[in-house]
Image (cartoon, rainbow, N blue to C red; front, side, top):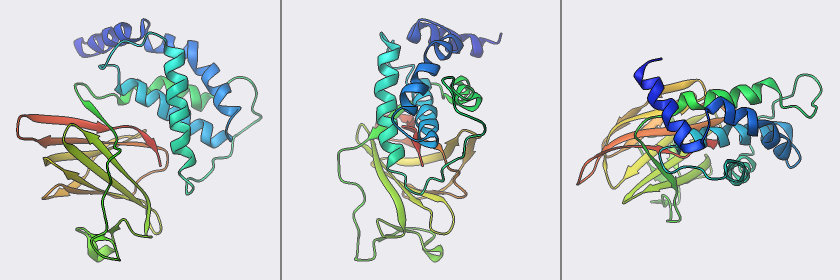
Length: 243
């Protein structure tokens, strides 16, 4: 086992009191059944995926004393986000659903640890106001020739995330092609990438902190950002959301 893999394994043991696979084996089936009792199949799949991805991201924060309770709280929050995504295309289950979770649900939980980034801080949804329209049409940003307008009827979803004095605005457009447009306020952006269950890919960005990702897949996404602040450099990830 490499030193990186061993360090990751040690972190999981400290945070969860068990290996990642053992945690999934112990909790994923029950979590799935509770989600399926509250929501359609496709919403339960997304909420389960988001929950395990969020757990992987937060392992640095503090040990989890009651993993079952943490998963249930996070799953309920994830389910609220999933229900706010009316454009999400329902996936049709193959076969008959029983008490046991489908293979894709278990695979999603087991693979979530692979998408964890080391030494990052999680930006969470902000209670502060997000981007405000500059005119009745909305706030124009780069790539305006292709019709991107923030906070307008063309936007399918908008959310602002916060960490310290930095705000990260994300807007999803899905009327023609699914694309994510973002803005960092309060710091100088130096790199940005889109995280999905297929992996991480670099996004283009422009001063003063505007970025854009094309061909955004359905399902859980997160954004990883590197930026310079007045005091030090940071790497931040936004909380996983199903879009």
